[in-house]
Length: 93
Image 1: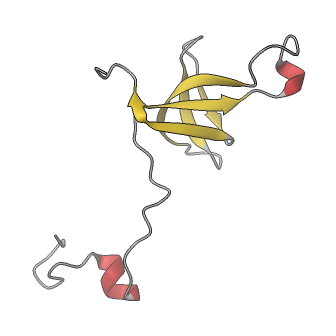
Image 2: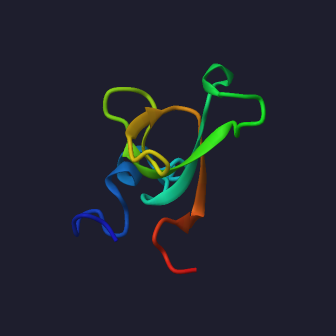
């Protein structure tokens, strides 16, 4: 479904560049994400190298993602994140 009748079934990007937009980098908001914890900040070598968080969106001031830490409740911006888009916080299983 396009924006106007003039475009028909095309998006504005399809009309300008004659190809469909690339949507592979879009993520599901509210999904569970794991952010990397540097070895320097880990208290011991058995501590997990990643911590769980909720994906809130794209960071505005830096290149990365906005996350809500599930353990502390702090909002943060991280670059090295792995997403579990099949799992959402508060969603029934």
